[in-house]
Amino acid sequence: MTNKTKAMIWAIVATVVFIVSGWLMLRGATSSVTFPLNTLSPHGVKADYIQTLTYWVFGIAAVVFLLVEVAIIWMVVRFRAEDSDEEGQNEPRQVHGITSLEIGWTIVPAVILAGLAVLNVNTILKMEDASADAIEVEVIGQQWWWEFRYDTNGDGEVDIITANQLVMPADHDVNLKIQSNDVIHSFWIPTLNGKKDAVPGRTHPLVLQSYEPGVFEGQCTEFCGLSHGVMRMQVKSLPEAEYEDWLDIMTTNPDDPSDADQIAGQELFVQQCTGCHQINGISPGDEDPAYTPIPDPDYGATVGSALSAQNAPNLTHLMMRDTFAGSLLALYDEPASPEVMNPGIPNTNNLKRWLRNPEEVKPMDPENGQGMPNMGLSEEQIDQLVAYLITLK
Ligand code: CUA
Image (cartoon, rainbow, N blue to C red):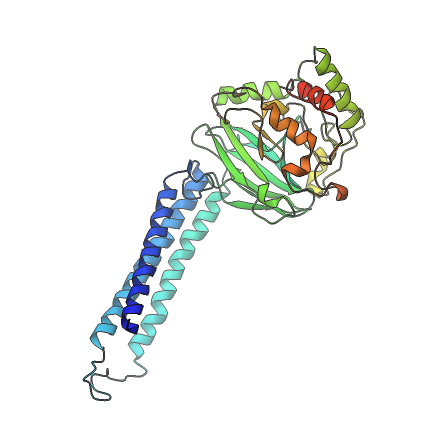
């Protein structure tokens, strides 16, 4: 095989690889089901702005690329040396310092970059816009899960604290105030908006909006320790009326347990779990909460919230979510849906598996206060706890 043939084969292989990967990307761009973390499949106005900007930038870059490639190919063919050529024969005229060319290739890129800058800045400004009736939600990154705090009546006191799943009304702006309780995380729901870092001691704004009800997946995108890779989250966007129902449920404590197993489970919860987890109304110290304040000067108004436990999720309405353990495990046997509040039968196997040994489910370091320790529960205790937990609607 001559070198020429080898080069030809490599060129063909490289071309095929480029075309196939491009095709896969395009296919991904049209499907947020196959690829849920897809930034080119916008379901909200902010993600649409990002997509439009992306298409403009890539479009302009593609035109530049084509012009340059055509020029290169033309020159390669036009000035190609033949085997029969004498030394120096067919060489292009050697030129140096053509003023018009030099001015041209300085001005043209400057104009292109200025155009891109206008498109970029214009998009950045639009990303911050939110309507006057936007809902405000505090988002707090924790190792390794996300907490969401709502002040539903605007009195400055948090009255809903939930985890993993951010619930919001469809076609309505939501102002997120993103913070962190430990290290730097990054909040990213690619079908609704870009990434925003959660940095200790700072509050970063991000606006979310979804055109339609739906469930939109997210993933922490800043390396934050052992379980960074499985620090997931969801946005559940509900029709306006269902969102109001959700608010009502979330601001009312769940019914007291009725059967013996559930009552035993509740007692066990108070003894074993309330050091870290909160369930409104039953946790000791509800009046004088032992919470860990988020070290943030902007945070003042809500630091005293009675609903906050330590660094573990508030479980008052656990079964109103669709996932737990940093959104890694499902709470129901049916997938999350904006149409059904509690889809299917509670997945007690997942809950038991977690209670048996959390570290077997995801990498954690409970000895250093990161993640849930193995509580050494007996199977009977696990059954009782699960019997109680699944009543928390
Ligand atoms: Cu949190 Cu990565």
